[in-house]
Length: 215
Image 1 (tube, rainbow, N blue to C red):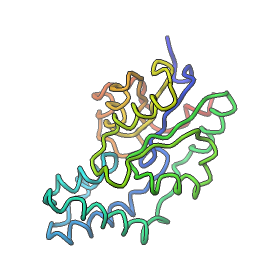
Image 2: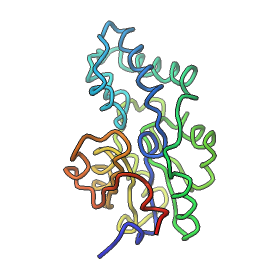
Image 3: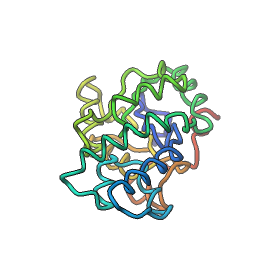
C-alpha cells in the first residue's frame, strides 16, 4: 500500500499549509468589505476565506460583480502594504522540506496567492530554494481555481500525476489534486472544518507536518 512517503513529487499549498497569513488576511478582508458597505463577517465565516481565491470570497460576501476587480485590487494592495509581515511559518515546515529534499523529492508550490506576491513570501521566510517552481493566479485572474493551477503546473513540467501528492489544508487543494489525477494529503493545522478533508477525498489526513520529517 502506498504511503505518504512513496511519491517522487510534492505540490505544496501556501496559506494555511506552510504559512499562517490569517491575521493580515482577516484584517484586510474586513476593511475591504467595509469599503463596500458590507458588515463584518463572523470569525467562522472569515476562516472559510483561507484557501479559495479572494475574488470568490468577496463575491460571496456581496461585492457586486461590476466592482469585483476593483475590490480584489484594493485587498491585494492593502494586504501587501500593511499586513505582509503579519504572517508566520507553521511548525515543521522547514524540517519537512529539508527531509524531502534530502530524500531526493521534487517540490513545487501551487497557491491561490497571486504570483506577484507568492515568490516574495517564500523568499521572506527563507524557503524559496526548496522549490523548483511556483504557480499562482496572475493579476487578472480573480477567481482562478486550484484545479487550473495544479494542472497548468503538471503540464508545464510534464509531470506524471500518479507520482505527485498535493499537500494542503482545504478541500480546494484536495479537489484540485483529484481533478489533476493526483492524490491529496490534508493537513488539519490550517483552516479546514471538521471532516472537510476526509469528505473531499484526501488519501491522507494529518494533524500537522511531523509525518514528513519524523520516523
